[in-house]
Amino acid sequence: MSAVLAPIKPAERIWVVGAINGDHGALKAVHQKLALRVAPGERLVYLGNYWGDGTAESVVATINEILLFRRYFIALDGVDISDIAFLRGASEEMLTKLQQLQFAPNPGDVFDWMLTRGIAGTIRAYGFDPANVQSIMRQGAHAISQWTSQFVDSLRRHSGHSALLADLKHAAYTTDGQLIFVHAGLDGSRPLTGQTDTFWWGGSMFESITDRYYDCARIVRGAAGSQTGLIEREFTLSLDNGAGRGGSLLALALDGQGKVIERIDSNGA
Image 1 (cartoon, rainbow, N blue to C red):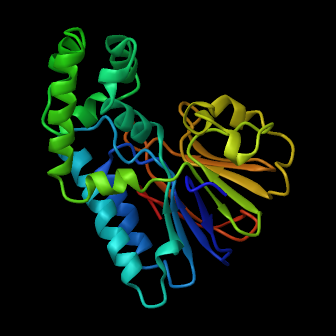
Image 2 (image 1 turned 120 degrees about the horizontal axis):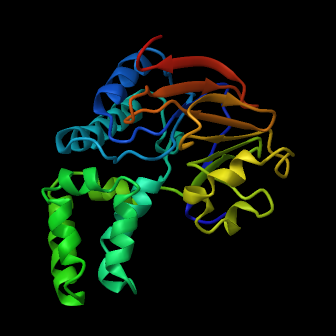
Image 3 (image 1 turned 90 degrees about the vertical axis):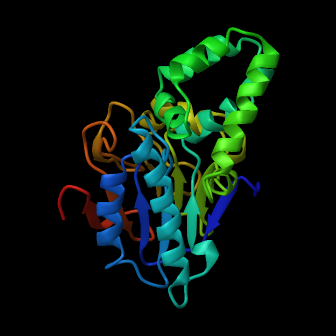
C-alpha cells in the first residue's frame, strides 16, 4: 500500500489515543496511566490532532510530551518502531498547508478558514500573533513567503516538532485487514488509497457507514467534531471525548476485532 498508510501487525491489544487538540494536561494524565499498562507485543496508534487551539505553552508541551512517550515506548524491550503509528489530523493538515500559503490562490481566505478551525493556537505556539498574520495574508505573495519562512524556522527550532509532522500517516490498518484507523472520516465507497482529504474533513461520511468496509471488522477514528464521547456502532468506533474543548482524552485498548477491552480517561480511570 501507499507510503502514507501505516501497516500495523495484528496484536491481542492495540492501544488507540483520541484527538488531543493541544491539551497537555489531558495527554500527560493519559500517558501516566498508559505507561503502567502498555506492554511489549502491543501496538499504539495516535489518531491525530496533536496541535490545537490551546495556549502556546500547552501546545508546545503537548508535542514534547508525545515525543517523550514515543521514546519511552520504543525503548521497552521487545518493542519495534513499527509498533507505534501517528496519524495526521486536521490540525496537522492545516499546519502543513500553513507553510505553503504563498502558493494558495486566495491565501487570505484560506487563512481565515483555518482560523475558524482552530489554527490560532498553533500559530501562537511558535511565537506569532494570529491577527498580525491575518494582515500579512493580504499583503501579497512576497510578504506571505517571508512570513512562512519565519514560521518554518520557528517550528524547526523546537526539537523534533518538524520531524514528527513529516512522519505522520494518513491512516493505519492491521495487516490482517480487520482494523482500520483514521483521523475523522472515511468514504465507504472508496478504497483507502482513494480517500483524498476525506480522512480530515469527511466526518459525516464516517457517521453514515452502516455496512462492512471490504473485510474490515471495525473502523476506528479519533476526532468527531460535535459528536463527542465513546460511540460504538457495529462497524465503527469513535473516541473523541472533547479533549482541548472542555472534555477529556480517551485511550482504549482494542482486541483484534476492534472490541474495547480497556479504557483510560484523563479525568478518571
